[in-house]
Length: 212
Image (cartoon, rainbow, N blue to C red; front, side, top):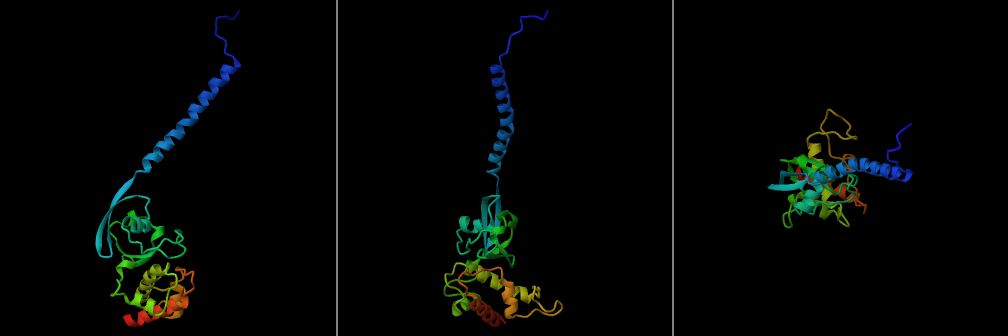
């Protein structure tokens, strides 16, 4: 006959024990993930940028965009946050002479780079020719997109000078020329909600002539 000295386990006790085991094993991965996320929240880097000719050292979260580094850490608020998705061009700055959407790139990716914002192009009383042309031709209304428009415009003229073709460039073997079609195509990534496009084109054409 089987022994009758073994303790009996009720159905209720079994269910309670099983539930406790499931809770403990299910919680372990979640706890580990939470601990990892908590540690990753504190990953920072020290970077050095040359912004508008001045060396600036920053201690920043690795996830900080270049746009936020400029606005929130260096307080250069001329560069605007528009869509924050790289679709409007309001955050355009120049990095090592090339225009980029600063909302789409991390600041840590530009350690040692030279960054030019709208503040570095000119100052009141000593405007950059492109800024002066925008003022003359009313190339803005609300002005929110204007810093990105101007930075992009300056870079556009350099692209044409360097003979970098666009989608409307007629010949890949001849020097690219300044035309309304070229300017409109190259500036198509900069959106103006006020619709000052024709005035912007006129300003760029005049600035190109002044530079020449």
